[in-house]
Length: 258
Image (cartoon, rainbow, N blue to C red):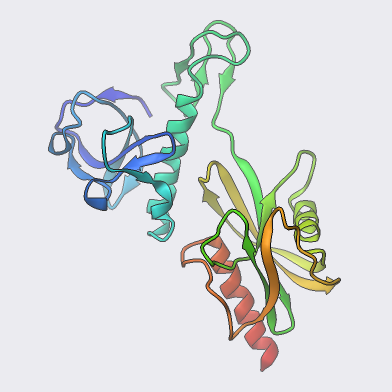
């Protein structure tokens, strides 16, 4: 975790990130020695390992080839998580130059991902916003929606942030009711996935339809409807938790139809 000034001989994968973007020369994540990519004299810190090599974070904005880290959503899960970690850490350090309590300049911890204030002794850690996401089945159909924040034709399951003082289960029931107007039952946990857009942890569930008619929240959704498992619209790519929930729900629908 300790930052070091690169000499040029260091080997690994290089995530150069600032302001939620990453450097992708030739459209790919650079790998090799620091000197091959003219990264010597930059400050860097190791944040993990990929394919047997160190993954380095450099908090810097290159003059060109800076791209959105959303390009890694459909890459291998571990690589997506490492890129997400890098982007979130870069943004955390960028936004914590000064202490929010006393205003003094802060230092980076040499032992963990944290910022320390030597004046008032306050310690800051990267914050994660928990979110829920849920696949809902009604007999041989799944509830899919188009979200206002994603106008690319993709239909996906419902999701939302957990509010203060709320359990994950309560958040699922509330979000489903607010966005679609229906009630659910038989809620069960499936899996979780770090989601660095900008700093979420998605907690996935499956549920069954209980009652009510679809009435969408137009602030959040463009549309929502029940889709038969063998006639789905455009859905999210693989290696995302939303796709896993859809696939799991489709499997349950197939069992129902047998």
